Image (cartoon, rainbow, N blue to C red; front, top):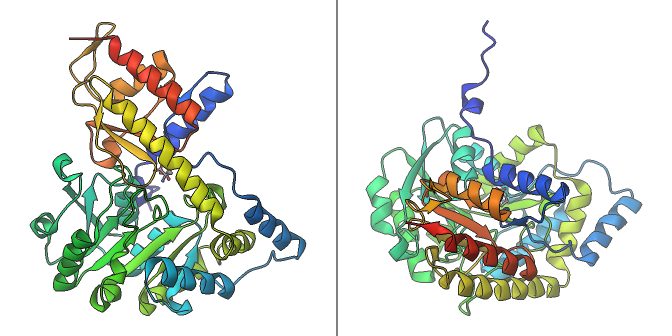
Length: 400
Ligand code: GLU
């Protein structure tokens, strides 16, 4: 026997968003005046009524195993939310609650992929998608969106990478890292493609409440029966309710997929945390004022950060329409000199920004776009102002 470790596990890259965020937090703890445009993590506390529900759960002794795929009351609340907000009709046996969005995605791909199945992932993409697909035995197939199309892909792009091994495509709208949203017509085109090719759509809609235009979020599964049958709609509580640490994600899926996911989960984690499920129930079924208030605040920050990036000399970005990220094109910085050092890539740039300007950004190499960085504006307005001032100072120090 050899002591070789799992090749599949070794092939996985650690999450750089989490690593860079941890580094930024460490520097802050050391007393440095860091501006951290890093993880997409709301700076708000989890709303009080949600925390109260968790406290009640503990006091009531709701601390035992629950059904593997989640408690029925929570599933009922999710069914209602899917009906009212997303215009999708699921029944409770189509809902699986898991330990966060990443866990939901892991279970989806475990349920649908066989070794070597291909999954189309439009780039830029959230860095965990390819790794989750690989862990489930799949092969990520990347297609690039173009800046002039707001980094979105269309049917022709999807056609160009389709093969007989294509099993699914990932659709993330509102998008991390671009902040872009697919409108109804664009979704219809993608849905027609998926139905014609008979593949699954894994629709990650975790940013659905962070949507800054009037037309409102459209879920691909709501378009017609055929696409509904092929779509798994993934969501979670982290972003909408400032509940990143609670780890509750959920899906609405065709019954057979939900059943497989549930049995996989029953061996993996038994069930999602019982107390967090009670908190999630309060979040989804309770008063939604907190969601509106947080979203309005993110919108104000979005408008501000976009105004400031337009004033920059070299950094450029398109206007984000959802989520809480600004996707910044840094091509014009490459080749410029800072204190005699030529900036050749996002690693150089990030390094200078942190060491000389105490600004931490996410290089987007792991998001499939090595000439971009991502700024999360899920931080206070005061921090955003300070961070943008520093980025402009940095630009002034650049030389040809
Ligand atoms: N999804 C968030 C982000 O992109 C949290 C960090 C992570 O899980 O990657 O920043």
